[in-house]
Length: 168
Image (spheres, rainbow, N blue to C red):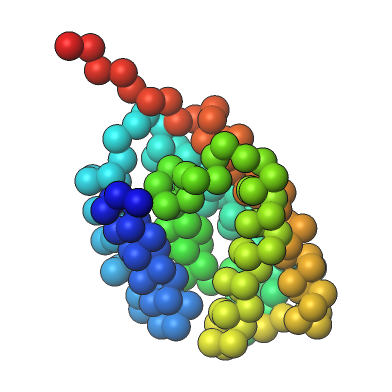
């Protein structure tokens, strides 16, 4: 694993923890990390479009999950800004620390369905989100959603992200 992939993974996890634990107060730091990512790590055409597309899809999906009371956020009628920011930070991982998933739809589904819901369970433990269903029901719903999302995100990566060939 090269150092940029590790840096991407560490940066995302730092942003995840800060946003989940401190909420909106951590947005400026997360945005600085995201800007640094765009400045120093984006090397291919379309990655910024991919990050923005994943962010919009994520906001839409989590908003639907809130609407159907899978998620409950206190004192707000929409998903919190920190969660929207987290989606942008997640979008920055698809071409880097999650790129090992790109070659296998089966792996995308398995990682999405089995592992991704743990992020929400951890957020629930940290009291960033309440669940309107049982923990097991929420896990199953999120597993289905994330299994599909990972396949969608990597299909979008194939469409939006083009490797630029440098001519000598």
